[in-house]
Structure formats: C-alpha cells, structure tokens
Length: 466
Image (tube, rainbow, N blue to C red; front, side):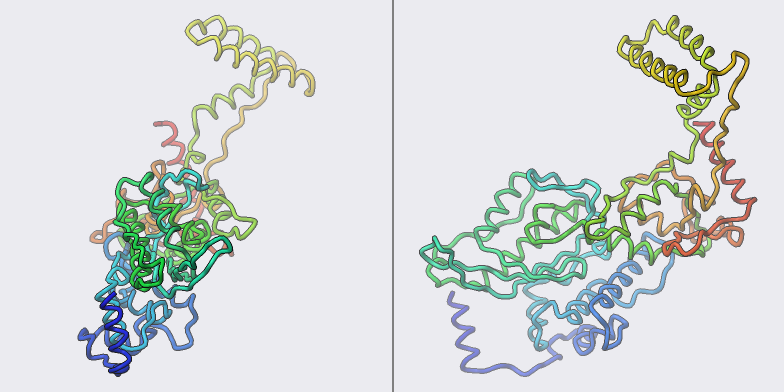
C-alpha cells in the first residue's frame, strides 16, 4: 500500500519520464522496440492474422531444428519473437521503453516458453461438470494480462465489488474477460480437487472490501496465477478444460483452425534427402478433412488416433467373404459341424452366433432367389490398395506433427527407411512419386502404376505376416 501511494505521488511531482530505448541495453530488443513488424518480416500494413502467421512460421522453423526436417532459417529466437509479437499486436501497454523494461522484469513469463507452445498438442485432464472431448487438443501459449479494474454492485450487495479486466492472449487470439476475486477463488478450490499440483493463490485481504487495497497488484497476481496453472500443466503435456472455460477460450475452435493452418504449412510435394514418405489411410483422412473444414454449427469431432487398419486385409474380413460365397445348404451344413465341435465355446457366444446365422439364412431364403445345390458365388477379392484412392503419401514433417497432435500411427507404412536421416542418400522414391497432403483438394496426387502396384503388394504382404 505504501509503495502504491509513493509511486502515485512521484508521478504527480516528478512527471512522466521521456522515452529512453537505451534502458533496454539489449540491441536486439531495442531494434524490436523501434520496429516490431520488421523483426517478424512483415510490412507496416500487416493485419492481426498476418502477425499470428508470422509467429507460427517462426515457431515451426525453430521446431524443425530439433524435430523436423530442414526448413527456412528462423527469423528470431523464441524469446525475441514473443517480444516482437506482443509489441506488434499491442497486447501490452507499452508507451515507452521503460514500460517494456518493467514488464520484462516483473512479468518474465510473458516472454518465455518453447516454440512447441504454439502447437495444439496438450491433452485434457478430467474436470467433473465441464463437457470435455478427450480428442480436443490445446496449446501452451497462454498469456493472461491485467488491464484494469471496474467497480460493480449487485442489487443484493451492501458494498460494491471489483471486477478485474484481463486480456487473454491464446495462441495469437485476443479477447477480454471480467472476473471477480471470488470467482478466481472458486476456480482455485475446484482445481485443488482435480490437480495434484496447484500454484499458490493470492491471500484474501479485508482492506479491498473497504477500498484501501492495491487493486492493480491484486489483478496482476490473479492473472499470474492463471498463467502458472496453465504452464505447470503444459510442462506435463496437459491442460485444464475448466481453466480455459473460465477464461472463455474455445479450445475446440482454435484446435480446428491451428490444425488446418499448420498442416498446410508442413505439406509439400517434395522431400528432403534421406527422409521417407508415410502412407495414411483415406478413411482417416476423410474424417480429418471434415474436422478442419467444419465451422460453427457444422463442427465435427477430431478424427482421433491415426490408423491404417483399413489398408490391411484382416482375418475377420477374409472369413466373412468366404462365408458369403457359400450356398444356403453349405452354410447350414457348416454351421451344424461347428455346433458339434464347439464344445469349448461358452453358451452365450454359441447362442449369439446361432441367432445371427438363423437371421441371415431366413433373410436369404425370403428376399433372394434360392440358390441351387451345385451353384456357388465367386469369392469377392479385396481391391488392391491404390494411392490416391485408398491412401495418400505425406512427408515426414506432416506425419510427425499429426502423431504429436492426434497420436496413433503404429500401423503406418512408409516408403524408405524406418527413420529419417539427414546424412545419407535419399531413400524416398524421389521423382517416381509425388507425395503431399493435397490440402487444397484441387487435385489428387498419385504415383505411376508401378509404384502403386508395389504399395499394394506391400500392404498384402504385411496383412499375411500379421
């Protein structure tokens, strides 16, 4: 309280200080303070979504240095990229260089983090009473910044209360929320029951009820608490749906937008030396397309873990095709033999199988032409897997990103070596195959017939060995 009064009197007596960029000392920070858009490689007419795209591109280029194949050189380290973005997007109240220096000293979490924070790779924790889709992902880039406070009074309250205005910046998207101290306290009590570790919460003080407290300091402490909760969970690869709902963040919508944008940036028809092409089932890709293209009321659920099970000939499918090729009399004879030998099968399973067989036989005899005893249907041969129709080839970067976000991929087939290497000759087909994601759906990228036949042969061989 004393420091608050001292600073207020100092501003009245001494007056405002002149802008002094030299107080930043760091030459890179000084250059970003003078022109943050130039640091992001943007023009002065750049729009907010352009700034978000520039930050996303810089993060992907930084991630590529350790996890992906070679991409363009990043413009800035992640710390300086965050400084440039905050200054360009005006998420912070910075009127002069002294304000930026003070923020960097008092709120260092606003300029720290990892490049992967922009990616939607965090899994949700269970929150009772909060509708949550386990397939929705979130990003770790969350900044809650104190903006101001307002006095409000409900009809039944004897004294007015304070509502703290907080600016929420989540993965480059900004909005404002207004929350009371009691609402933050209720959130803290619920998080204590759901999480193992919860950061410290600001203590309650009766002086705020009579208008003698430092509201700015309390608002900053509450915003810092929300950032710490999300950061502690993000370090373990999780996020709290309750916290995001409290901050009015639509995690599902951001997941849709970011998944589509990042996938489009990573998609390519060329491959670097020593990398591989990965095959993804078209069945899974159809669900992914609906997810990234859905909006508003036509929003679809995430596709779930990557799976290529439809590319392989399962034993159950083969047995079903053989059964369908038999005549009605042969089916009855075969079922009678199975019933005589199925002494070790539990009665419920035998009963269900018998009922299913009787229903199928009755339907064939009622709605289809009776088959002659010596007539047989030709066995239905599964259609060979064809690139462009049954699966698509994507590059290593996109495959790695999808596994980070959606998971799965254990049954994926790939062309080339099992793992990429940047120090040996190319193992991908190169000029013989045109891979990529087809993100714009403008054309189907297929391979020559020889490559497609080879792919189908590999799929059948994998099914036989399994």
